[in-house]
Image (tube, rainbow, N blue to C red; front, side, top):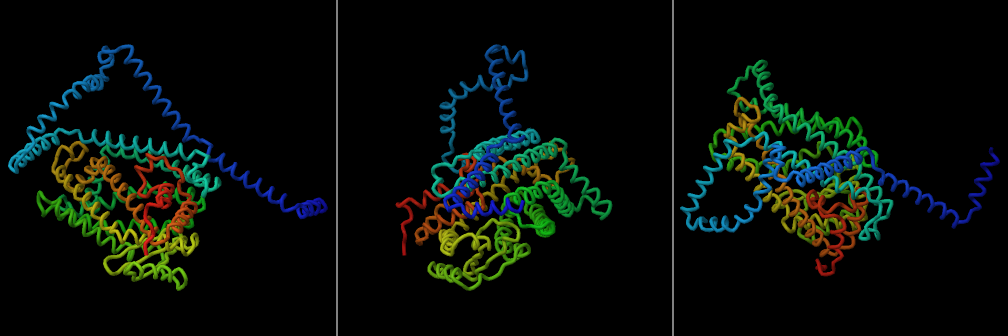
Length: 557
């Protein structure tokens, strides 16, 4: 046995460099093929998705056959189809009536301030009457399932992309097949978790709405508060704060299994997770306590303002939340985040000198330059800028320093300074304020609607419950506004990239973006519709194409 081992070692030593390179190449090819098999493999979840899609197709074909066979007799045979049948038949009349309706609208369009006020009053009265008879619970269920089906369809489209094993030509020159497959395998695991999480969450939401579990929790908290604390119905604000804490605890418990699986299975499997169980539990407890400590008083002040401000409370609650958001921008990085991560000054050296020189060149008021121990929890990397007025700070993750060269990190910091130079943060804050105002203005239309409370099974009409119910109604509009925010964010990212390129870091930024894409195993070839709806940053290929364009962002001194 010893002689056989010795002879094998001697043969390996005698093998020429070409033979060793061939053996190494074969091993790499085998590893790539094994990774491709993982990406191509479709598991139980994919079989379920395929089965549902085939089932929907079969149902559609059956419906078409029934329509073709029974024709106009279909509503008489199946009365449940009558609304759909009448709606379809009404489409031609609706289309033919558009010109006349447009003409009437133009004739009635207000020309003076008095006419506008009268029209507003008429619409307001009509809207108020409509709210009285609105089937709130049914509307929420329809909205919720419509949003779930739409987003699930997008997730399935993205999943189909992740099952691809051939690299697109646009990335084949700088992304190896192994890296591409590893990113897709990571994306598939995250996609599986997201699909299961969304399905469970949708079932939970449906049960909560159908069985009136929100009012049930409200009254249970009230009974306990009265029995053990002597707090009656007159202590609505205290009751609301206790309800907020209970609801937060329930939400945390329901999401905990998915957080554990994401951290200790998916992230660990792909080499990202660095957390211990102790750190995970500590973070979870800290997060819950912070929500309670900051959220509880905010709920109390919010309800107090509504109580004293009258019908136009939305102006005051909007102003309150605007102040809170500005304070959060200051408090989070300086008070809250240090509870989770350690911030230290970036050591003296080439990187610090290069960043300080860039900040001086741009007249950026850099007060502190930190490195944060992101590697304590994850291998993902990042850099960001925060602060107000003449007190700005730059934070760089230690993982970024380990992944990129000095010039690449400076290019990435140049991108972040581009956001500052072009006032992207104030603009996004302004958009957030517009969205906040719309939320509270719309809430003002529903807060006193007794039909809404009754529809969800509430015996009384506390403001806190009304706001929870309203959030379900607001969900479709919130998704539309979030999509608009993502569109603006992607535009800002292109502009910040162009800014870094003008500084002379175009190639370095491109190299840094590629490295970050590889190190973070981000999706290399996302579905266009999925990325347009979900992504706040443009896909890598689009950013590289913009940086390569010779007519965009020429270098300036």
